[in-house]
Length: 479
Ligand code: ATP
Ligand code: MG
Image (cartoon, rainbow, N blue to C red; front, side):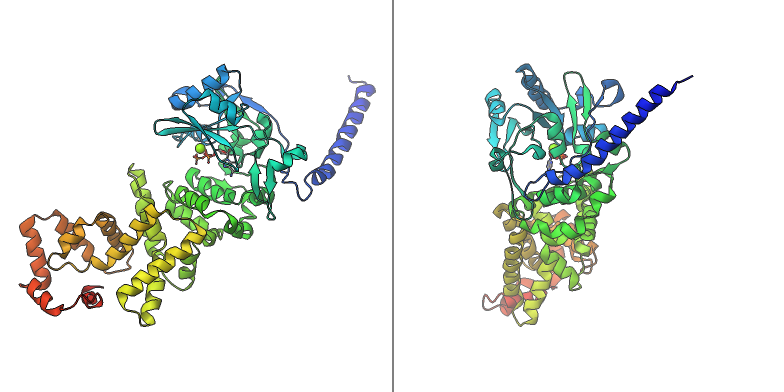
């Protein structure tokens, strides 16, 4: 039936809308001119997914997180579960921890919870502590596009575009767009049990895609650690990186060299102890991200040193984690740096240094270089050195030595490390098996094993051969 008039009107509307659309893109580059840390803002459409259409049930949220949400709500603030907690539940996984986003300022949150502490400078946040569980509460971040001069002191970038401070507060929608990946910008509202999506995160979850919000290069420059987070989440969830999210990584990877070593240490632990260590290690290699984290490891690789032990260690770590067992950071770092240590140790021996001093020097050198990339807290570097040093002692078992080694607080870790060296083919198998049997044997069995090792009178023989305390004379028993 339709007359001509509505069609004309429709055409006019279409024309105006086209005209306006054509204007928009030419405005946004101005808005994100150099100097501002502006994110290219995606078109936002707030989507509310009601309880009937998603699987986030209150039973899957920790009591502590629920307490924080309820108390904030009751005090008149907006508060949502956000990040990994929502993402992992939607994926049918168990969340590692729960994060809350609110419009209450950190000070207001702190006031509400006696069991809380204000932390951070770069990002001021509040930790609400419930025994061993910590709920991280962040205040909605503001929109970079509406930055005023006043805000400038609260948001700062360095010459690489890295955000040094980001303490401008905003509303929920702005907060969503300052988050890293679309799947990390989903909010759960405990008041009506809905999930709120501003960035297309639900669709990306369904299509198993990890996608940065905004312009990827800008977002990586603001915070290069997002490149590591991309690798970690992709491995953990079995997602593909969206092509635009993936494209700049190789080239921007060196930006990680400017990140404080302590933060990189934390990230490395998350990367390697999430249960997908080997896969993550491959991805780090593929995207040039291993070099800023473990420069010595990459150099050793390039000089032909096998990384078989690293792979084997990561495989074992992944298997342990899958069985619910724990892994220690010093063990992982001992493995990650082992090829570098061997390279340095060999070089020193080639230069004529005796084997033991060469090892000690190599250890100091490798750790000294590594802590410029990632910190290694002393409580981890000490045990790491001991694991390495024990590798030299494990072959030398005669007399009382085997018993002494077994009493060493790091014996168990060093023995596991030895097994991994054997599994990876770095050394012939045999010694590991010997130690396995020795630990299981009773006293008579142990004496028997020791006597088989070095003939009927090992102690006397050895004493005669060792008049001084020269360490290098001991190395004949070594590998
Ligand atoms: P998990 O805790 O399982 O490692 P997560 O996504 O919860 O994953 P967190 O480090 O706990 O990660 O951070 C919580 C949320 O904070 C993220 O989901 C994301 O929305 C936001 N976030 C964290 N780090 C960044 C970052 N570097 N840039 C932008 N947003 C971030
Ligand atoms: Mg989290």
